[in-house]
Image (cartoon, rainbow over all chains, first blue to last red; front, side):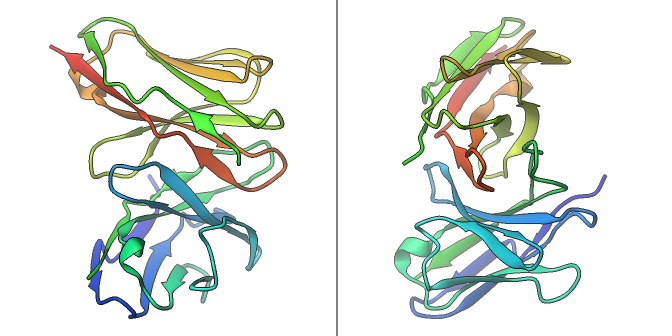
Length: 115
Length: 111
C-alpha cells in the first residue's frame, strides 16, 4: 500500500540554523500538507499546497517557513532560522482531492530538536 | 479561532466493551470530519471520515455526526487492548483547505 515517507526521522540542529524537512507524498495525490505537534500538544496545521502554490497557511507559518515541491515527487518544509520553540514533530500529509474533504494520509514524521 | 474540543481522558474501558469518544467543533460551516488514531510517538492514522448527518459504520467503528449540534462521535465496539491509543478528531474548515485537530482523547482498554 502506498505511503507518505519523510526524511530524516530525527533532526538535531542549533538555534539559528536552517533546516529542510523532506517528504515524498503518495504518488497520485495532489494536495500536500505540513503539520507540527509539540510534545504533549495537539496536531497543528501549518500549510496546504496545491498546484505548486500555497492554498492555505496558519498563523504559525510565518516568514521563517517556506515550502517547495522541487520536483515531481518531493515536498519540502524549510525553516530559515530555527528557534527553540520550533522543536516538535513535523508531519507531512497528502490527499488525492480536497473537494468533499477527502482524508489525508500522514507520514511517520520528523522529530526536530533545536538546541 | 476555529476550535475542536475533545475530552482529554483517559477513558478506561474493559476489553470487549464499547468505547464512546466525543468531539465538538465551533465552525458551523465545516463539512468534513475525521477520526484518527495516534499511538505514542507515531503519526496519526486514519480510522474514518464522515460527511453527512447520521451514522457511518466500518467494522467495529461507528462514526456519528450531528451538524445541528456541531457534534461528532466515534464508537468502538468490542474494544481490544490494541485499541489503546489517543483518538484525534479533525475537522476541515468550511471552504478552506485547512484542517483543525482536537487535542485527542486517550483511550485505555484493560484486558
